[in-house]
Length: 599
Ligand code: X8Z
Ligand code: ZN
Image (cartoon, rainbow, N blue to C red; front, side, top):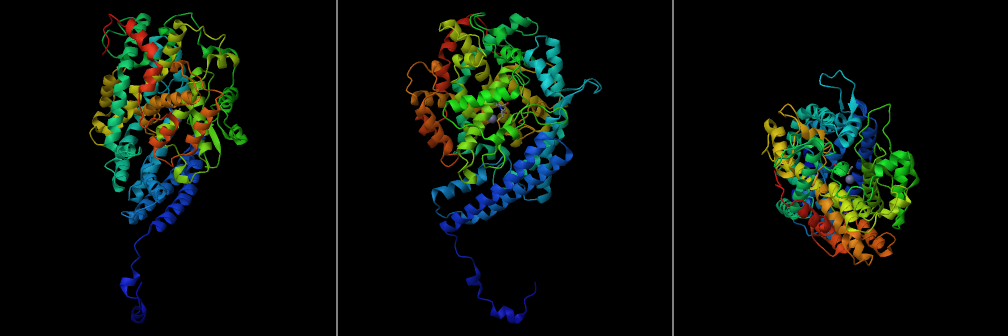
């Protein structure tokens, strides 16, 4: 605009026009407005996201990408504006919220708007490709099978050929995702850098109230604690698989082929429990058979989960949970079946999305998902930036920690076990084996996914070696090998939900350790002093009160404070997990005597 000369003369001198130095009060007002604006935009984004995940079409993907685009743009604008408070002494809440605004993001927007739009549309597309992924045979002309059909084979079949076929069939889905992922890495890193992070991995590692370097060291320390137990389990399981499949398929001293472990990603091994049961016939723990025989439907399984939480003194789920949740796979459209839980409008609008099958694995996942919902319920009155977990791992640990306290008597009452197993050493070892196949087997897998992604984001692994580096890492860390030759035409990371959906995974590694700390804290709060593995805190008012107090904090305090309130400890630490599995560890070491362990 041209300014007429006369008007120019009337303008105040420039020195007066400069804004006054921002005050702590300005920052407080600013962050309050950010809380309101981001909540409004996040509700739009999570609504569009819910529709996209429960009705995959080009249109729902586009709408979700747009909503995400608006949210990322607003977050970036807020971060730019917040720079004016650098160096201002702020009250603790304002300072914490400004920090969370920066670090609690799975991606940040590139400054370039076209790149931002491309990023959000790639994200929506990758999740859609995964959700609608199918195997239609090597030439694409066979009968198509979705992930649920393929998992049914990998989880239950003992026929190596059928297992291999289902495994390779699903992993082919990664191929379509590869080119998108390559571009995603470029754009997401651009976004991270434009907002002051070295790369996307550095952003993820910054979300834990410590420096990214310290965070990496902490995950190494915790893994070093648990690794000896994993190694013992691996050795014992490999011997069990050799008994079943022979040494030609499972040779001594080599990594276990990934298709034989009862899980598409070889991440949890519970489904092969019958092959490695320490004392067959001592006490049946086959919940899946009961669920099938009694024809449990999805709703009844979720009701049982809710019953468990209300038994601890927590509230029933809101009525809308039952009308808005997606509990079974619809036949008439594509959906993302990977389980999730959310408060879609951030107002106790709790729901889960899950394609529930009558299987024990799904019953466990239901408890996990409801843990998310109960956390969301507890912090619903916090300001928006605090409406999340003390850290991501806390959110993942809550449901699992409570489920550790499920007693055989509870399962008997629910009709899922015939009788309470006898209280003897053999029954204990059976139960611990089953639990370890779920909890301990998972640890190197869960740590490995982000170790691979951190290297990718840091540019240390390039697209030319995506696939080979993935398997090099999994072989080394997990002792698991690809069951078929792999080339760089494949993209097996893309066949694991959290990679195309861009969900960081170290949260699950930490959660699997942290849940034993929560469990021990709640046991002690309930006044129990016996061995950790035998503790149950259901019915304890004190345990319920402490849990509720921690959940209600949301992200309002640094996580070590939240952890201390529940457990008296300020670090995430493998001690409680090791204490829990102490009987199994001793037993495994005896079993493995004379075996050549390792790979
Ligand atoms: O993704 C999940 C949940 C949703 S937060 C179903 N989990 C991880 C996985 O499936 O890989 C739970 C355990 C690990
Ligand atoms: Zn979860």
